[in-house]
Amino acid sequence: MSIEVLPLDITERGECPQEFSFGAVFADHMFRQVYDKGVGWHDAQIVPYQPLQLDPSAAVLHYSQEIFEGLKAYRREDGKINLFRPMENIRRFNRSAERMVMPQVDEQLHLDALKQLVSLDAAWVPAKDGSSLYIRPAMIATSKKLGLGASSQYTHFIITGPAGAYFAGGFNPISVYITDKYRRAVVGGVGEAKTGGNYAASLMASEKVAELGYSQVLWLDSVNGRYIEEVGAMNICFVYEGNKIVTPALSGSILPGITRDSILKLAPTLGYEISEERLDVNQVVADIASGKITECFGCGTAAVISPVGKLCYLEKDYIVNNNVSGPVAKHLYDQLTGIQYGKIEDPFDWVVTLED
Ligand SMILES: *Cc1c(COP(=O)(O)O)cnc(C)c1O
Image 1 (cartoon, rainbow, N blue to C red):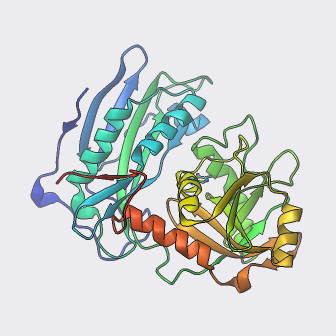
Image 2: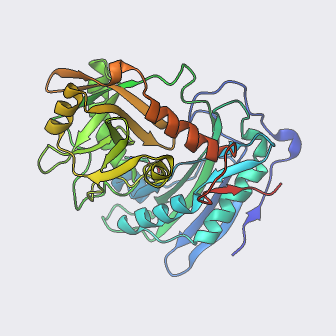
């Protein structure tokens, strides 16, 4: 199946603004295709960015049968554009679809759609240091029915928009609050899927910790309320003695991040030891207090690496590395972003450079 491209008249095109806040400005075009049970996917098109038409009874609006992805296009110094491990996002999209009883999307078509959309809107890939074009694929259930059950109709779409440098104010650590009250996801549930409901469910905890002056929630497992899972919508890593990077093992309720996976593959080549473990929060705060843990950071596509300088657990603050970012976080950040922007060699073949 091929993608029909219906571009805007060149004179109607918008322009990528110099200043933008994340996720608030969108590029000129979008991709969309629709699915009907018995027919499959059809009408794959790249069209001007526009509202979707949905019936008020559309299943997604009532029962959240929805999935999404998040990746970026990076402007290289030679002017070309890189995608970073896009097939990993495409495969995770299909795994999320399977969990939410939604149809699979052809991987090659999805990749072609990403490439064609970004190439068409290349003017929207900013060149400013640390900035990128954020790409948001999503799929929604559109059947007009309030009866609960998997939809028979879906829309898959991709929108993009410029994203500024995450650390415009410097590579400064965030503070996190380890909640002993709210839970993000359960084993057997949908925590491994990138589905909207997980994020709606997390909002109350985010609001409460923001009121207390912390910037992110650290989530513990739902069964024991004891094992570390994720921070906000990022995976989490701890550095022991400056050379061993430890991250929670995928438990069934942790979202398997591509940044997490990239760190696990990259770090050993930089001389670090890595380990995926079940991490008891009591041990972790004790290891922070004793200085065994020398750094802590979140990892995900948006920030790449986000140092954590302060963790609050049971009303006590634990400070990591004097609340300043540490060398391992910076080293990994520089190496990963170096590969993404094409500044350093990519021994893993992670980067896909778009043809002009
Ligand atoms: C998307 C996401 C991540 C990070 O995944 P990346 O592929 O690295 O961007 C981690 N945790 C949650 C809950 C997420 O939604």
